[in-house]
Length: 414
Image 1: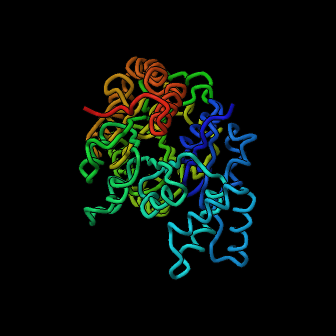
Image 2: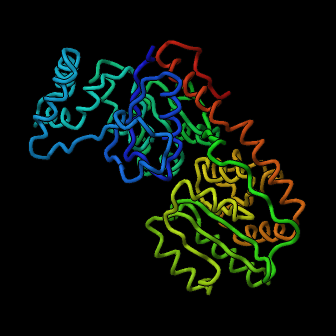
Image 3: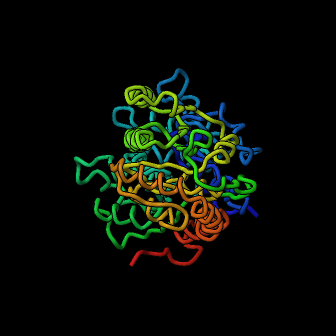
């Protein structure tokens, strides 16, 4: 028997940097939920990177361009395909949205996939993307809407407007945050403390990673055995690569031999490459660009340490995945990272924007093979205990059942 119909709303799907949405989507379908994804752009070119999406293509729907020729007729056909229920939803949608200035018909085109699906619940995967969309609940028959906050949306979006998220606080049924730090940020941004909410950290599918990496023994950082550093993440300012480059320059100046690979692309690619050259690190820092998801595991096997110099991070999936592979982490105390890494057990946490502290942590672990090995051994058990995919999906199952009135009350934060 198929469970309730939930639609996940995301700007782009799938995304190499958003594997958490893919695993959640596929996992909930596997639990019997009738889950669909509605996105502004469907990346079919990335589909093969995610084996778990096999057979789920019909559940991913791209929102049409409301201004394209024939779009309005297409929206009408979509409602017609949904039968009498779809026609009723379309009529209710237009009444709810109003016809002034054509706003209703144009919206009908853009939201045609939702009208056709007739969900029981809508979940917007990023808080920033939910602004301006809270009309969907009433327009689709007073169904509940929930929303995730994952970091950037609370730390940087709309800071100049104290009421930027007010419509969400007023209208969503419940909020999901990755951790306690983000929930406190939500409250600081105006979220009522008594708004139903759930803290669900990312879930890691350990079967994707095979056996953990085997740590290299002994002291590293010689010309024959340079310390291997790896970073994984979009090349954007909040990832703090400028501080990482300065830390690596200090390590090289102190006589440590380093190889640093950076996996990812982004708007700061040229800036990072320029700073690398400016600091004379062209032979030390390698920008790998986009790496297929399946090949990231091999990069983690190469690494001795994961370096994550972020200045803002909601939680950090790459940091979790490194621990799952038995790779010790050197990361900053940015936002949720202190909840992610067990400081002194699976890695070291240092102050953000502090290249000296980053360099000192890397040097200390490079010199101590036994400590690296102990951290490597502790990584996967920590992920399995606190961030396993099975527990993650069970938490999402409880969250949605609670919102729909079919399960226990949502958990709050004292």
